[in-house]
Structures are given as structure tokens and as C-alpha cells.
Length: 438
View 1 (spheres, one colour):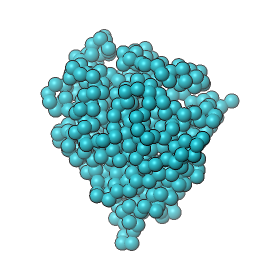
View 2 (cartoon, rainbow, N blue to C red; view 1 turned 180 degrees about the vertical axis):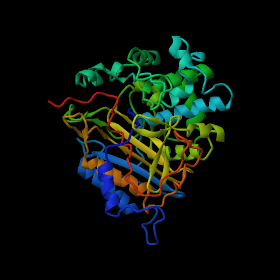
View 3 (spheres, rainbow, N blue to C red; view 1 turned 45 degrees about the vertical axis):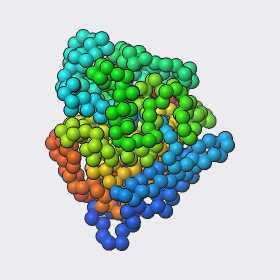
View 4 (cartoon, one colour; view 1 turned 135 degrees about the vertical axis):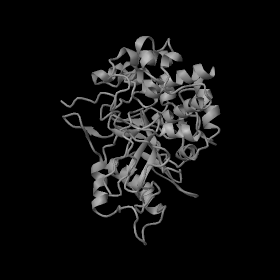
């Protein structure tokens, strides 16, 4: 799982803009078709040729849909990756958890601006529990530290040993919350910009459990996943994925060479912050239901889309973020676990959508100053996402922040001037330490 933040592929995307492959909103007649199947497949193929083991994607434009794949699901056998494979979607889980909590707000059982101590005083005790609110958890302004370094301590020493040591370890939510609370806070509660922390959504899951009296993952399944009509989305009940899937390879910037398969893994370290398994088609269906008002009332959806800056992300709401592209605004999330990355973005009314999965993570190299060196894979995946969402530069995102986004300063205007978009590829895992270059 990773911090959602601007990706490292802006350089390659800038080339698309300057060479005229992308145009400003309002492109003239003769523009490419709304779903250019050949171009979409070519961009996936380019990602595979550039070094991505396997990637698969689903694109929608209203009733039109395309699904494609390129590469291998198993590097040893050469088994091909296929559209619709089940995949660990990491932090996209946060949108599901946030929807479940906002349903409780809608029902009058929970208050967004109530202190978390009202619900889990034993888990977040003392002054912190009385200061941090439910909203601060969901928009990452609590400044409670991420539990990941505590759960995987070898990463602080430049080693990935704890990834293997904890493959079948079952963490309790209380343990994960303890790791986050024991680490230094990243700021004062409520400060902006916020700081992305998976611990926030583990606490949020525990609040959901206390309010409903049920296991939070079962509650989300019954009240979010099933009402959205999702057939291939679930919290795993063990370390294995229960349907056809790709292996999931982790490189950790070259520390694991060759990259190792982590598709079999106890996901209790992620829980309600990142354990969901889904497919690109189901993710499109989920965000379409959410943005179409089928899962939340209008007021709760507006709260979800009230954004603040979080780290390098300009507009993070309550478990969802806004991304402004040359053709308008898109909503969604991305996620990454060890070996698996996913991005899902939808236009304001859910008609134009793209969900993309990949099975090799942190394949880039790290420079001496600790920055990540972009890979040709990033360029190819960036081109695929632009082709999916802005094929003719006039996507449905619109010229204003639709669906109630209030922004961090009340300014919802999306510039009509084409600019280099920064796509949130789930590869940086920037809340984790990067290898030191000697």
C-alpha cells in the first residue's frame, strides 16, 4: 500500500503534450474515437516491452467498454496475463471504508467532526483521541504516523527481510494502531497539508466496527460491495487469492533481484486500509455507483469530495482524490501492495473511466539524492491512461469541479489550458525508506 501522490511520469507525459498527441479541451472534428482499442492495446504492449511483466486495464465511455492485457502473469511459465484477473488493489480499499463510514454519518450514527475518542477511546487514548476527529482520519490530517515501518522494521535498515518474515503473520488492528501511535507524529492534528498514513484507515475500520457492532470487513462487504453490484470484489479470508490471478512481483528498487512473487500474503497488515481484492471492471463499476449517487446521499458525497492538500496531492477528499487533466477532472484512488499496483479514475458522473493493474512494483532505480529515476514503463503507462481518459482532449471532466468538490480553498476551477498531468502510479511507496545508493 502506498501514499497517493503525484507520480513520477510527468516528464514523459509532457512529451505527449508538446508533440500534439494530446490537445486542449474542445478538440476539433476528426479526433480519435472515444475508445481507440488499437491505441489502448499498443500502449499496454509498450509498457510490457519497456519492462513491465504484465498489465491489464478496463476502459469505459458510457456504454462502450474495452478490456485488454499485455505481458505475462508468471515469468517462469510464460502464462499470459488476462483481462479481468483478480488483483490486490491496495489503498483503493480506503474508498470502500470511507463510503461505509459516510453511510453511518447519513444514518445519524456517526459524526465526521466528533473526536475519535467518542468511538475508540481505548485505541487512541488521551488528548490525541480528544483532538483527532473522524474527518481527520479520512482526509489524512490526523498526522498519526504510518504503521508500515513498525510492521516491517527491516525496511528502516535497507533490507526487505521482514517482507518474507511476515508473509504469514497475522497482525491485529490494535498492533498496527500501536505502531502508528508509537512513532513520532507528522504534525499537529488538523494541519494542512496532511500526511498520508495507513494507520488512519485501520482506526477508521475499528470505528466502523464499534458503531455497527459487526466485523468491519463483513459490514463493508454487505453494505458497500454488494449494493454496488460487484461480483469479483472481496476481502480475502486467507493469504491466497481465490480466483485466477497473476503472480505479483516486488523489486523494491533492485533490493530484490530478481523480483519475488508476493501474491500469497497475509493481508492483515493492510486490513481496512488496503486488503481488498478486485478487478478493473469491478472497480469501474464501484466508482460509477459511488459517483452516480447509488451508495451515498448527495450531502455525504459532497463531504467525500471536499478536499485538502495531502503531501504532494493537491486535492484529497475522504478516501478519494481529484485529479485535473487536460480534459477535465477525474476522481478515484490508486493503491499498491507488495508486487501489485492499481489505478482507478472516473469522470464526475462516472461515464468515462479507466482502471489499470500491474504486477511488478518499484521497478525504477533510485538516484544518489534519493529521488526515483523514471522508467520507460512509466511513460508507456502514462500514455495508456491519457489515451483512456483524454483520447481527444475533450473528456467529460468538465470545466469546473463537479459533484461538490470544494477544494482546499473553495476554488473549483479547472484550467482549460493543457498542462502536463501527473498521474498517480502506485510505485513510489514514499512512506517507506528508499534504498541508500552507495
